Length: 480
Image (cartoon, rainbow, N blue to C red; front, side, top):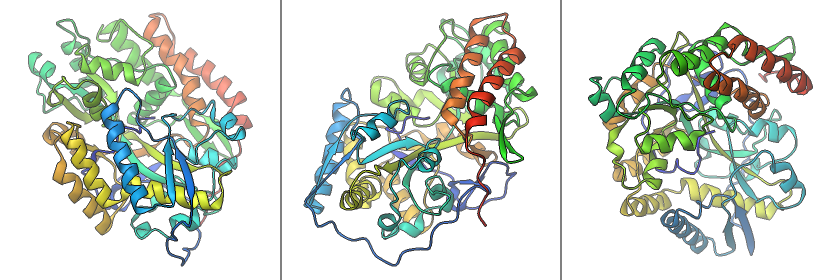
């Protein structure tokens, strides 16, 4: 769910295999997200190397920055020029059409979908199952650094047939973004953000002063359900389970109720939240940037998002901590994947894969782009979860380190604290519909002091089970 257009200047800070409590997600080699027991086995590696495109070929994608970011567009166009100079047979045409699951089927059917399109981690398995993505196995496996991908990252875009249908490019972990100056004003240690629900409530109350609220939470555009899921992970819950060959709702258990009760208490008992409600992620980011709130649940890509849109804001005033915990010792991790139009010709698909690999991972281009981003004042160095391991990951890190300008120490509690948490994937079935079903319950406890958390979740569970889960394909049987 996080904004995948803001991740490109991130630096990976944690990596290496480790042992932790595992349920839905584990840390793979190099620190990438790896789905435990659900990652399909990859098809045998093709022996063919990357083949140049004969051309001429035109490739379309939806990676252009929004029109209100002219400097970012200029840097993006420089990447296009470098790629086309190295690949004169390929012309790249980009749009700023962001991912929209509502319009996606119609755009695909009408032939309006780009050849390469970016989606969040919640989408690939459904897209693959519905036959809405091209098989790019032969094109991707020919890339010289293919073996550097973490298996868990590749698993996000691997079908049950073991074929590859996408290229993972970015991983995030949800945490707590906060205003360090407000912490100091309130007598709180800016280097020690709250790590438990109890401490979080106390901090939110203390920070509600001088015209700003202690905390704000999202509740619309499926983002209430997104954060509800993260809070439930922090308390040891899971919204959906696979039992006896079928999907079953689980978000209306005592953990789910405790999540809504936490938010209701913050709003009405503690009076520590904003009066304005029905917010999305961009709203809470703007509230952080303009000093209206002290804390919000965010992914680290919120840091460059704010730096890009609020250039006069001192980015050093913000810190990052782990998502406060209530016995779950876990948080939600996600990311972004490039997928490809199944209606595109093989030659266009080959060219599209080459373009995405160059744009996202070519080291010379990365160096030139970061240099340009640094020159225009972009923030470089927000933490993210790596999708590579080994020598190639080290080379990427060296390039990022060369240009990093983010106040890394402000994120130290997040970086080190994330090592102690289980990073859990977003729910694996009809994720966006799940989030949409939960939004009204989150909205209710934030706008109605008399709202009943259990009744709200029971109602949402009944509808989601009958209308969505009972109609969904059964859980896949993991391959050996």
